[in-house]
Length: 180
Image (cartoon, rainbow, N blue to C red; front, side, top):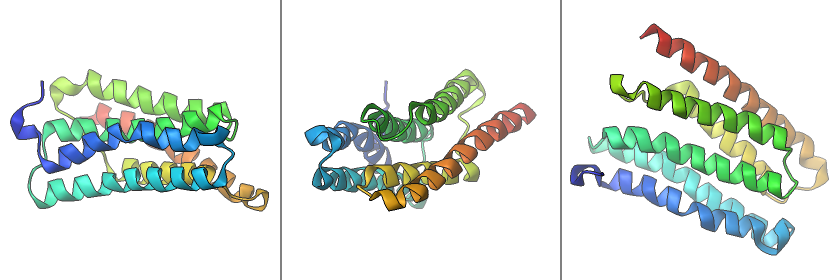
């Protein structure tokens, strides 16, 4: 049950981020995912939703309204965003499933791990995790955008970097948590 004190503006923005994801996916799938206009609309929607991640955190810190609920929900919203984008791209055949699976296994695994240690307190996202999230979102964005084949190397390179950061930060997260 969500306490009234936890329904502040930053947490409401985080909840709205999750609620916007079906619209993002709809735009990406519109006309079979091959329509450049709808792909660009999907990019804009995913971009706006992604930017709210910075907004909710900044508001929570500046207004001193950081809550345990927000610290827990924000990473879940991040995972829902990247999961929606990657699964959609893989269903459309734009992104290989193996990439989606590596990222999702890490993201779900770390989320389960966070829940398993929650009795010791919520583990907030660290700087490496935030950079990883940003790179993942940018990499997905380059796949959502209707880029020409001459730029495929760029989006593939960026996704490669996202994969490396995903695995390394997952390992780091577990090692650091064991030190507590």
